Length: 293
DNA sequence: CACCACCCCTGGACGC
DNA sequence: TGCGTCCAGGGGTGGT
Image (tube, rainbow, N blue to C red):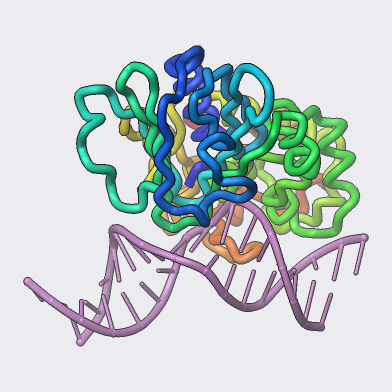
């Protein structure tokens, strides 16, 4: 399920490989996957690609010149964008390929999303995308600072994990990286967000950056669907300490990892390491010996 | 306003 | 082998 590291992996690959190329043709197989004008023009047919920008889990493709110049992608649960080289450009698209962008050098980008939790939004320009979609999101998880995070968390009584899942609070985190983050910070997912102290937020932001950057370097986490533009799997699932490891021994203390439901999401955590009463204890206290990530 | 349950959708895992 | 059932979950919406 694409979260920030998977989308950033995708953005970097598309930026380096597609920048400056012209879109010569666009095939749209499912019109209802597009919100906003679904014309070939709105999907940037005939335009030169000027770059890719990301906010949270959303990715935008920008065209040089005037409007329309902006297509925003959300990959949902199962979305992928695969870059086909000339050698494979003629092969029939896989099932659930909803749109294809053909480039000026015989390559093509296939947008697939079997579960259709994702989508494509067209906008006149990036400012319009920002106004109508991205302004409603919280700061990007790789850009947020601890004062801002603290300010946002202290305003809500919701469980910490619920608040972090809320893209209007902070953009880019999902179920996987939140469980990994909370374990590494030894914070219980059900702590009321308003109870978090400034020092917890400082540690959380520091740990979050390390975690997300490591995941980007590893090409993201592949559980089932995620692939890079070449169809290769990510490697960061090897670095998961809790997600997908319910019942296994905690890497820090050996107790079996537990699952609970938080905001209708399966949540894996260590009931010993991640204290509900965190904050009553010195933050700089015992640091577990954890694998480097 | 804050929060939560529910729903959308498909493929894979699992049981019989 | 094959079929049925359950489950995964981001985010929008409507209800409490």
